[in-house]
Image (cartoon, rainbow, N blue to C red):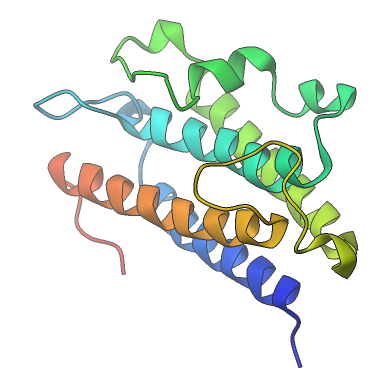
Length: 167
């Protein structure tokens, strides 16, 4: 029988798989296009998801580590953080390839580390508090939910940019 941790990991993997299906049909030239009104773009959504998975699955579960900056830089975290505002000038961002590389790198690291999370830690408070939950296991479930929320935004952006839906 799967554990609660197995289920959380499965949901994170499912959500990422759905997001990737949406992204794989969008050329890099479209990542900074912002439909009217200009609210967001694909590049910001993907960068934000990378930042969020790092914060929710790595930082809040085991804390920041000095070597994390090789995976996701402080500048990247700031550019796509909660208080950031998307803008259409691509010069203020890493390239789509760089954003996608961080997105993929953080996800691989999360999946490498999560299976080793001891059951005794599942219900302990996250290293960094969050306003929506107070247990590490809930941080993992929120990661999956948060990704699906942004996958919906990516799906809407796709439609507004003239792409057909991906099911």
